[in-house]
Image (tube, rainbow, N blue to C red; front, side):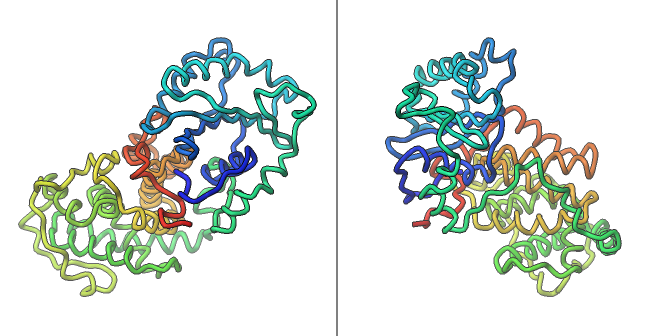
Length: 401
């Protein structure tokens, strides 16, 4: 996430108060690195703090941090924050080598470290200040951060800080066994009808039309159970699942063109389309020819390379819908969680992406798209949109003031 344009930072407490809002949670045992563009905050990166073996020679770790931050092409400085409680009084000795390695790696890349801090559960302090008169031990109270002006402004704008992504319950935890079974039975009934229409172009257009209409009109209320069952069944078809993700980010024409290019349609499949509210799902939007000029491919969209700016409003809506659809688990739940993992990765929230993708694999062992996406996340591969400030997701949108 990149910060809104009109936040005012008056001191380190404001910077430190912004980090949990940027990540969505209060980090622990983490290094958080932030880029600066002049006097403006840029991108936020979180990594696990290294263990003793890495601390003995932290140069590779420092180069990894540098390589991540290079994605912000406009960065001209960096800030570092060590979130830890281990050996609080001895932190300078513990992290002196790592801090020096980070300074060297970032400094030679045009991003000199401007400031660094240690933050624990109770205290925080400046990593460079050893003057007890202005930096008394054990440090300043963390309440200074929680009560900072910027933190208050973020809360006023509607931001909240939740639990760490690996600390929540499974999405189906609040669903009763009976409701879960009923949903999966309704989903199975729809799947029988959709399975024999996998090759139908008119069913594909009607399905995407239904999803597009939902993204354009949904107000955030719980979807009717019949709609949830139908949408869950649609996500069980990999080509349709991918088309929904692509359509949300890049539009209907891109989703249709890619489907044509993959050759998923069977001209002999002439069954009438099905879905909740048909004929409201008809007619489907007009067809786009395969590989049409100026229309990005699925791979380019799924990696965040095209379009230049995705439709973040629709992606945010899709994320909330997929949250509902993931609640009853199963293969459809794995598909929904994988979609949420992809959206989190597109937003630059790798920790959340890994958590969603891990939950998807718990629901459906070997779920291929989740495995592929999790490998990208673990390698530290950045989504193309997350690496460009002009395209990156903003929690409150560019109009926030």
